[in-house]
Image (cartoon, rainbow, N blue to C red; front, side, top):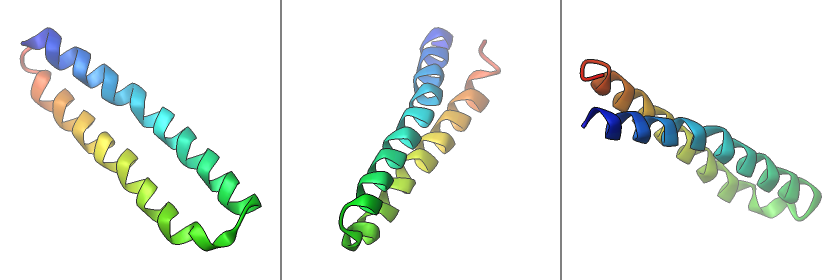
Length: 66
């Protein structure tokens, strides 16, 4: 149980910077391409925030079991 929590937390915490890099790449494509897709870009910032909260919850719940 505790190893699963640690692995899940590590995966979530590693996925946060990767998703931010994906957001930056999309931002560059939208900036240099057509500027009409900026509204769709705002939805991409929700994914890193959700993953950050999930990673924090997993670490907080898993710290007692480690």
